[in-house]
Each structure stands twice: as C-alpha cells, then as structure tokens.
Amino acid sequence: MIERQHPITYTIWSLLALVALWGVLERQWSLVLIALLTVGLTLIPILGQSWTGIRLPAGFIAAVSIFITATVFLGEAFDFYERLWWWDLAAHSGSAVGFGMVGTVLVVLLVRGDKLALAPGLGALFAFSFAISIGALWEVFEYGMDTIFSLNMQKSGLDDTMGDLIVDAIGAAIGATAGYYYLRGWTDGRLSRAVATLVASVTGKSPR
Image (cartoon, rainbow, N blue to C red):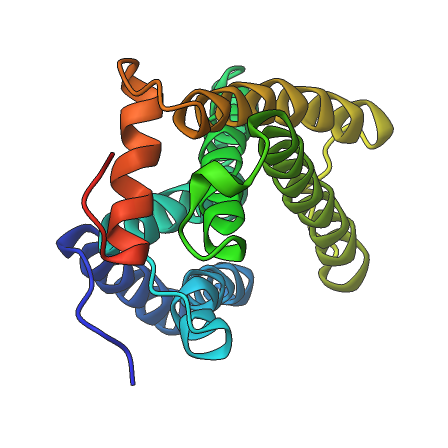
C-alpha cells in the first residue's frame, strides 16, 4: 500500500500522466516511454519502504522525484542538458549531497539509533561510500537506457560519465561531512540539522 505522499510528488505524477496521454494522442512514443519510465523510477523509493522496513519522509521522496524528473524527463524529453550547461551539474551534486545524508541515516539505523556507538569517521565513510554507489549505479542505468532504448543520456560518453562521478564524489563528501558533524553531536550547521531531522523522521525520535 502506498502511503500519502507530498503534494509535489502527486503534482509530478499528474503532469507526467498528462504528458504520456498527449504523447499517445500525438503518437510520440519516445515521449510516452520517457514519461512512464520516470513515473516508474519515482515509485522505487516508495515501494522500497515495504521491502526494507524503513519509512522515508514524504519530503525526501518528493526530493528524489524532483531529481528523477529533472534528469530523466526534463533532461531527455526537453533536452535540458543541452539547453542549460549547469543542469547536469546541479542534478548530480544535489542528489549526491542528499544520498550522503541518507547514508548517515542508514548508519544510525544499523546501530539501533545509538549514534554514540559508532565512530563518526567510520559513519561518514559509510555515508560517502553509499552515495558514491548510488551515483555509480545511476551511470550504469544511463548506459543501459542508451543501449536498450537508443537514448542519449550519457551524451559525450566517457567524459560525461566521469564528470558525473566527480560531481557525485564532491556532493557525497559534503553530505557525508554533514553526517559526520551530526554523529559528533554538532548540529549547528544547516545540513547537519537536516540530517538530524531526517534521522528523527525515520527513527521516530526527536532530533538531538
């Protein structure tokens, strides 16, 4: 059962459904494919909650949906990658920061909510590795889409892939650093406070 989501998520689904319907009427099958693919990808973190037993905040799922829509739909269907030089950079760096923070949440869950039971440096390393892994899997996904459906998500090939991974690494480092500060009990920064709020939403405990 899909729990109630953020209004942004519902708005994204509605717009994608309308675009898919228009694509069918106009026989723009590539547009239909990209719209439906985008919807399917936004459902993964929602359905994954039942598989993992981890409840993600609706706001975080909305943020993931925005990233997926920005990269897959707007990037491909409306060619934002070519129109806006900074589009790919913003999408990958922002998502990497978020996944670095999520990696910290996973660390806290592994130690049953006792953040003091884990060395902050080790927790930050896990968060960084988690975010980088997600970025690498996304590059594999792009390669698969280009190969199977003849899309052009990788653009310039190796240069695009390596550029994305470098940006992912920088964003992951920022997110992991925020997690490090949280694990040390330093929550004065904006990102470290965001980590504390995210942990509280998942664990049901008040931010510390």
